Length: 118
Picture 1 (cartoon, rainbow, N blue to C red):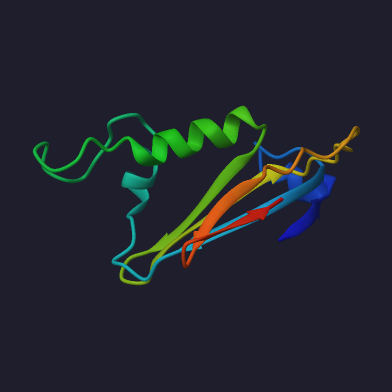
Picture 2: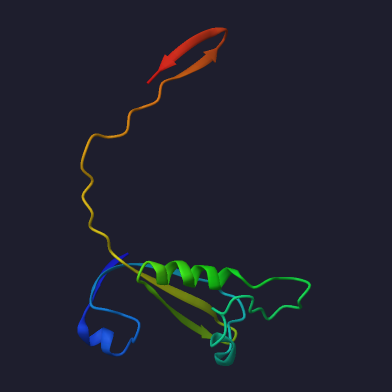
């Protein structure tokens, strides 16, 4: 979803800057994440699972990619009600100039006959 964050919103969300953003929302209906655990979820190798089960690198990687693109993530969770991740990435308005990429030709064999396509 595309949206505009204004100065009022950004004053109460320290990572946000005013402007146009694209928002991606990921929600689950699991058991939720407690407030203490939420503080650590973006740390590399953090996991709540036994060390033999998971390296806990996924959320850290997502957080890094979002930050590299000047975005931010908000996390909302309640015990027994699941977790929602709202990912905000600044909208990019780049015009593409030049010719479109050349279409590749290919050959397809159908019932012993060659069909050329481009």
